[in-house]
Amino acid sequence: MESGKLNTAVFIKLLQKKGYTVFSRPYELNIVGLRSPSTVPNSFDDAICVFYRLENQEWKLHIFKATTDPGTYWLRQPGEPQGTAILKQGQYLNVYALDLHRGKYTALCQRRGKVTVIRDYDRDAELDFYNGNEISGWFGINIHRAKASGTTLKIDRNSAGCQVFANASDFAEFINMCHRHRELYGNKFTYTLIDLRTLQRALRRKKVIAATGTTAAALAAFWALYETQLKNHVNT
Image (cartoon, rainbow, N blue to C red; front, side, top):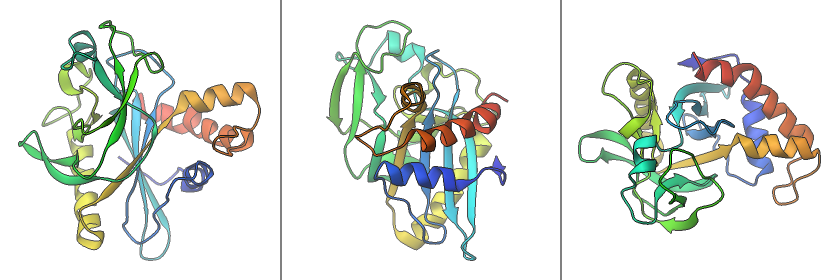
């Protein structure tokens, strides 16, 4: 779903404050996952946002309902003995490429570099973001869709740690943007994941986060954006 109401300046400011790269050439994609403050598993309560500049230098922003977390099926039955992977927030520069997800359909796949995951090892239905083992490597944390058509309501088996679109048409629109990016800049894509609970905790502390240089004022602006617009969008 396309949105012309949201201000990309807030995204850009936050990414720059964290020291992340912001791409500004025409149709060069900035792909940002927003992990909801909710710890309720199995829900598509996150968002994947894509913004880029047009040829006239105006910014275009799209917001898609998604999950950045694994479903309860894989939390209870992890495919690895160390536990199910939860992607750690951060920017993964040029790590992704258009390729076949599990050999079936085109998606953005982790083909060009390592990512960092947190292994949730206790085999319950709760998302453990801070208590697991942190590991970097090649885990196939892809960006793909759930069902081939329509909107999927529950994550279930659709994510074992991947970043997954709830709606198939949204994903098709996203892949079309990726094809245009590839034609202009090659088959390399950056994915940035922001955990909104980090912003929430920072606002509660009301102080500068020294590690990123992000001020409470900047965090407040981004949090307001989530509360007033993003949250409403992903819950529809």
